[in-house]
Image (cartoon, rainbow, N blue to C red; front, side, top):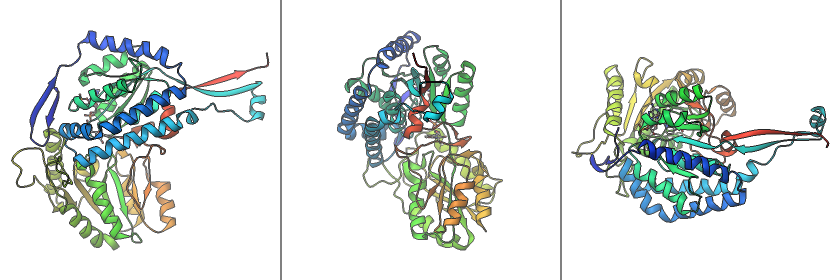
Length: 464
Ligand code: NAP
């Protein structure tokens, strides 16, 4: 895959980048290693000041970098600006809370005595250079979500970004450089995915995090396993969205449109499977379909656009195959189901609602990465949970109900890393983010995320 900016709204190749030569990659690995030895000794106050400065610069750069993001991957400009703002918030959050999250932990006095120590504590130390293999769908946020906690903890970062967002990748390196981070603390490696194995096997690389597809995750995890290196994997999702009889149907339907179509439908935590109780099926599905059909598809640079093009021609072809498979096996497209009229270029796809989806269809088990919703009818909460859990994925989940017993049942039984009740899944710096099953393992954000790339060191000390 060439490392290039190709505008999804036009299909035009705007810039092609030469991948790093092996000697250039080597230079950067050496710099990451050297930088780590010094940077690990800095205090939290110094790291927080650097992160705050990076946040300030990103805030100033937001109008320009948002245009770059939209040009490279096609999300509406308004969404790109919101993504930059979200990054600023997370950077400030980790600058404020990093030290507290990594404060030494002290066991109870009785346990310290029982362990035969005068004092004992857990001290969090950084691991070293961490390789981050990242996707294009939130090209700023996915990186910041890794980098803010990793750098606050004292690690150094090596970013291998998706090949279709090279200008955003280079911007991020420049951002951390301008913020004053020492050389080598955060670097972008413009390399293809074929270079990842060699980098990960390098003894100077301590650990890796990958956000992306299951195939990429499997590949990185197997190399890391072979090298006995820690990994965090944030992979695909096909989140269920349960609508039960006591739900506020107006709100559930209005929210479902955003939950499915945000980011042109290309979000791992988008709701993708809508599992609706038969008592409210018609009321919900009519409103949901009307909302999806009313979305304005168009030029992502236009402020009025709700849904822009998909990020790649291949991505649209994959989505088309999934929809065609479903309709070929009996699903009905209540709206959409193909390419919108009036676009002679760009990788656009209509917001689509499919009903009559069954387990025999590929969309039941595969991730629809675009504005396509699969709607199921369930006769009971029991059946809704069965459909929800009949998926290889387990990223997040959404439930609409006013019944506390149903909430408790869903929290107990939904196989997912999150349960969002009467709302849609959205990440926040203070809340852990990640999945189970084929959606990956490990957590990002919150205290869980910052500790993933730390060495929880036991310090046991007897009286001298
Ligand atoms: P992708 O093809 O897996 O690419 C993600 C990153 O992995 C890119 O940098 C890619 O590099 C690299 N890569 C691909 N194959 C690799 C391999 N065999 N070895 C090492 N690196 C490899 O995924 P995508 O299409 O960009 O992103 C969409 C997927 O990401 C969806 O499944 C989505 O659900 C998932 N996602 C998950 C989360 C989460 O938090 N769980 C968040 C966002 C997205 P190249 O670009 O050079 O190929």
